[in-house]
Length: 357
Image 1 (cartoon, one colour):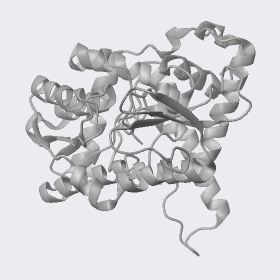
Image 2: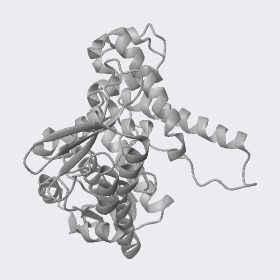
Image 3: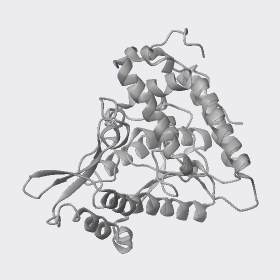
Image 4: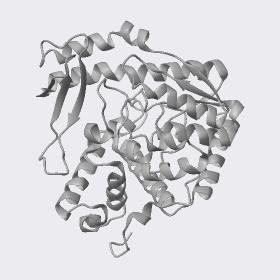
């Protein structure tokens, strides 16, 4: 797209009815004909992405063919299960609750994470809470700095810059949460001959905000063509309750309250959406004054987008096999995938939802 094209927040406006109809048609074709499954399993966290995905699937294949799966664990926010049940009742789907705490304890998730935390804070133990935060890359940090924030039982807050060893140890342990949940989703999918719906939006999918073989795994991903801003537009149209739509996006990974912004994106999702759209449409950084950014901040946002794409490229790759395909063919496939994603966001931004290949 030419840099001369007018840019504003309006570029992310869509026609909800048209987008919904096209997405529902794609879901039906994908589930019943391409995958040849009888229905859909959706993990519902209480957030807008999973709730919108569940609502779209219920509209597409019938509410009696959708299972909503709630998988809390002992560190999940208190309102996750309540909001998930609110959604299931609103759209009339069946649901199952599987508390995955015991599985995570058996795998050593909490024990391994706490051992990594004690490399920095030796007294960390029972009653403590924690989260990981990222330096503000857009405000001016030259490179990403991850810090560990810990709250003691008496409310004292400590913040320590993470070493690479401690960071990787914590991340490897908490990734059990996403992988155990995905294992449970496929238990129900196998039992019922259903397909597993992934719930990432385009911003998360493009920027690698998912765990490989965890929440990144699915049989199909019905909202991966929609920016987060557009998911909210569609959520209202398909009847996701307002309380869910008002809830700030969170990670549901660490025991302290944590936003996606402070953990991964450095910007609120609405600004990140505009940055990603502008980057993919060849717009100069200066246009992002419409998002409240200076030219320098927008340029740093562009660099951050490119950096995350490069760093998380492997998350999108299928298992590699010797002699099956040359590295050149793999690179060609990656470029084709990026081209397809660009077509997806072009269609979404113009209000004509991408409806499959």
